Image 1 (cartoon, helix red, strand yellow):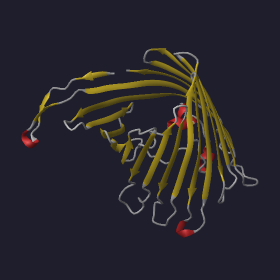
Image 2 (cartoon, rainbow, N blue to C red; image 1 turned 135 degrees about the horizontal axis):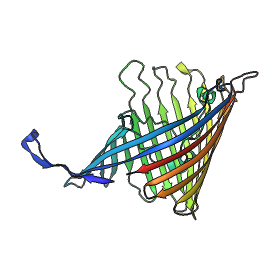
Image 3 (cartoon, rainbow, N blue to C red; image 1 turned 90 degrees about the vertical axis):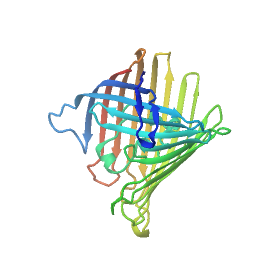
Image 4 (tube, rainbow, N blue to C red; image 1 turned 120 degrees about the vertical axis):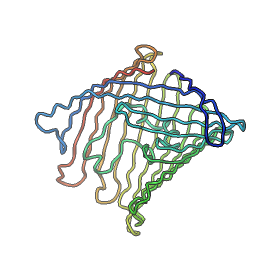
Length: 333
């Protein structure tokens, strides 16, 4: 990371003059070889190679200023390799905690990673038909990272910490699917516990909201990190009819630091529909990876993942599978 000092700027508004603070500029660029193979109901067509090179670059601009009151005001904007704004936010932090506003991951999403095995992996895996059925490869509650939102995260008090996020879907007649989420965590010292919940409104006002809950635990010892969580996603029927979906998801991960440069990880997820017309549908995935730090600021990952979806409908040809391999090198600056 390097700092670029801006020149003094005259502020016309209010007739004030202020010296602009330094801007932190950091980023990364990665090149990834990706190979994918689909089978079953979503099998690859003839002559599909399934191989590709993918680039992934980010430039992050950030800066902060602390007022005489002790409040710290900060802003951040991230550009991706295509030149588009990927996320952006402002924060106000003090003894009370941190407020945020912007279009990026919400406060709840930033606090639940310790209990999600899926947070350990680079890509993970799902299947085309399994995704279409609404089954999940993570237990996390709802968060739309590109949607504008506001949030709050408390400071940790006696091991407890809380977070809240609210995103508004828009002004239109079908933009009633606002998302409200919250989380509470407790650090025991030897392990950390968490409980999160979210509610996503229906696009209309018919009451078909989706409520999600997540409970989990995370711990680290002797170079080993363990994360485990269980989530439920329940969608209410429109206009008071019975629930149309209840999906239970388990998300478990394990990582081990062999030395300062090398680590291995594994993650396993399972998701099952419990009610509605798709009751009995199942999706499972497993991911194994190796990470290696080549030099300061230069890292690499080798990952293999597979997923399998089973459609419970008798005689259905929708069941499918996927296997994929990822090899990536990233330079951070």
